[in-house]
Amino acid sequence: MRRPVNLSRRTRRAEVDGLPLQEDLRYRICRGVLLPLAIMLATSTSPGEPSGLPTSRTDLTPKDQARVLAVTRPTTDFSKPEPFELMQGGAGTSEKDVNRDAFSQSSANITFEEEATFKLGNALFRKNWVSSPSSTQASDGLGPLFNERACQNCHLKDGRGRPPEGGIGSTSMFLRLARDASNAEERAALADHKALNFPDPVYGSQLQDLAVPGLKSEGRMRVDYSEEKVTLSDGAVVSLRKPSYSVEDLGYGPLDPRTTLSPRLTPPMIGLGLIEQIAPSDILAHADPDDRDGDGISGRPNIVRDALSGEPTLGRFGWKAQAASIRQQAADAFAGDIGISTPEEPKHWGDCTRAEKDCLAMPDGVQQRLGTAEAPPPVMDLVTFYSQNLAVPARRDLGTRQVLAGKKQFYEMGCISCHTPKFVTMRGTPNKAQAFQLIWPYSDFLLHDMGEGLADGQRVGEASGSEWRTPPLWGIGLTATVNGNSFYLHDGRARTLAEAILWHGGEGRKASDRFAGAAAADRDALIKFLESL
Image (cartoon, rainbow, N blue to C red; front, side, top):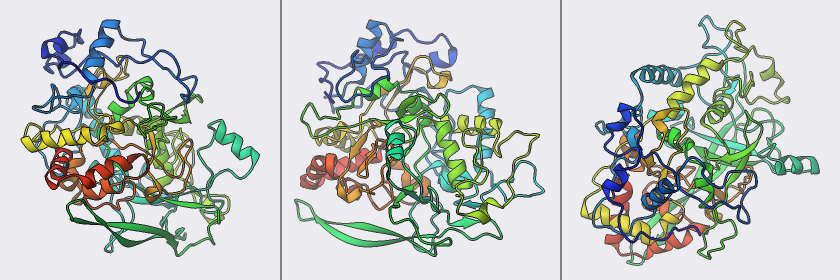
């Protein structure tokens, strides 16, 4: 069943504080925000669940398991905030002033020494790479074909990107290029999780709209919008803009006719380290691929092959849950977005293909004294640590009457069927800052069919052309504050939260219809709740 049974009573503060906490002073001062627990799950694999992945937690006592199960059940009391709800990123939650830097704060519970590591990672995240050869030391290797020169240029202020419009370029939204399997060998690679899909034979896996001097770029994304009117139950009209994507100024001939175009907006960076430490079994417990409970919500994991271990594992990062770890996601971005090689993705010419001979003839930026990659292991270590420790901001206005009313609407409209409110991270995490945290990401990190309106037609591993991973909602209310715009969904087509909700089709259709049919006051309250996250 996707929905746990409701609590018969609220968990008391004393019960939570009474759990055995870490004996580290940094964790004892968190006033009960940190919980050395995790969720108790079923011990047998159900039909449709991937074999070989853990289906239960082994690091908890039965007493701990029962308490955490109570803590993470959806509430039925909307008269006041839940315990610890303010600190939606656990003990690492940032309580600093809300401003444009709200997504750029380090986890509040890392050590003084780790703060220095975080700042070094931040410097590399903001670093502009240059083309080779260069007089700079360890900064060359850009491209030769690329989309941006620095991570921060895509993840604006560590937040989300924006679609190209009004003369603004597309550097924070890209076109992924891919086709499905076309022969038995390729179908076998997909089935064995050795491939997610297959690139365009000329343009590779991503359209590169920039190039180093002396080389042509691959082309330019074009977005055309049409407006579709939606009339709500009270007569209010909302205009949804429907995008159409194409490519102009192709530099190396036509695209393969089988190649699909999938726009991807860069997502916010906050809370990634906490997401990485949710137990796989906790996520799988919400999967219901055959909809056995008949609620119209399935939820499937994207099983991918871990680049380091070589074993099939749970994907949880990216718009289609195609990456298993933050480090792999970073390596993919270095190669695909900037054209920088890493030990994980040793592609010195980025996404250049064999058909792009002029690109492959360009010099690379490998310096043997530093290693065999343009971004050697120390660079990857620092960027990964930085990405793991960008703090989730504290909630705002969570105790107001309208926000509480909106939270009730969020639950009753069925939004939590996919946007799971709470998890507790694993006990044995590599960094104590992410250990045993009660967190509120509002996501199940599973794939859901969102209907034809949001479909891109592109398969990515187990994800079909109409499936997307449920994005976390924490921090969504600060989008305009951090990024100066309010564009939502995978391609930024939604200009308001209401538009984003109304675009939900497929498994999200019931919740979307309930929102459209609600009274104006209830819709406004739900939006206020989202803005408080």
